[in-house]
Length: 165
Image 1: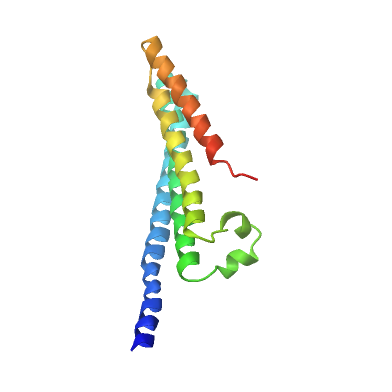
Image 2: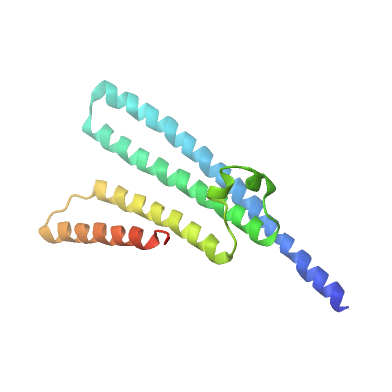
């Protein structure tokens, strides 16, 4: 009875495959959204070349920032899918045989997965703050000071997230 239950409990880890498939599918959807944004960027670039409009230039900068954000989100989903698979199912043999696999997929515990995801999410947040900064026009010295403090805090967060040797 106990052996049967333990076998069932161990096999239940395979339910994680639902999350792995969902994350991979979501990553593909996000990458398709990113490609659509790139096509939109090319159209804006063409408008900017023809008109030289400052508004079109601002729109172009915002689209580029959104493209970075979109592809980073797709990367987060893939890293999460890879991490779930490696933690609960098995090591990815194709990744172990690949030169790039050692750079991306060294996930040995939940903490290492959280660390990898945290760094990518931090980059997404930095990009989002950058996009807000491009839209902001500080109207007082205090607002400018707040923007400076935010930049210092971002630099501190990047410093603290750096791997220790």
